[in-house]
Amino acid sequence: MAATHLLLVLRHAKAAREPACQDDQRPLTGRGRRAAAAAGAHLLGNGLIPTSVHCSAAVRTRQTWEQVRAVLGEAGQRAVVSFEPRLYRAGSDGLLAVVREAADESQMVLLVGHNPAVHDLVMDLTGAHVAAFPTAALAAVRLPGSWRDAAPGRGDLISLWTPGD
Image (cartoon, rainbow, N blue to C red):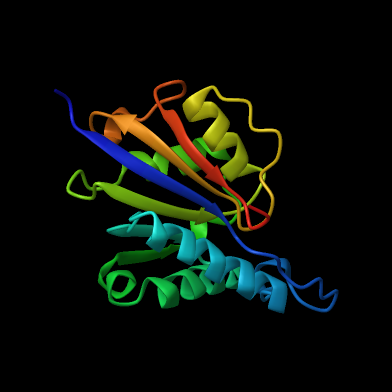
């Protein structure tokens, strides 16, 4: 039987709207920090502990990961983390390219990024209609075979969690 991998796709949590601040420098709001921590609690409570994390280099995505990692505790500290500037403006094709580069030893990969790309990626991979992907939304997508084999329509949407759940 072919190996399967689990891709966790997390949209950054709620960020401040600061006109004097460059978009990629916007920090999380208090609500955003709480929602990111709740996403971490959801991961921990469901045994979804990523071994590898690919995170946009924007401040709000980095802070989202930091909140998640704090809740994951020691398991979060063990994850191999890559902060990637290319994820900031990437479309779903760019995110898919990052997924395909993941090491096959990483059975569970967390991708922390931005809309609309993360929303589009989940729908592209699974063919599922996902009406909305709000801030701090988290999708779990099962992918068969190698990470290199990830392609539109090849994944199964296992779960979709939002902070309102």
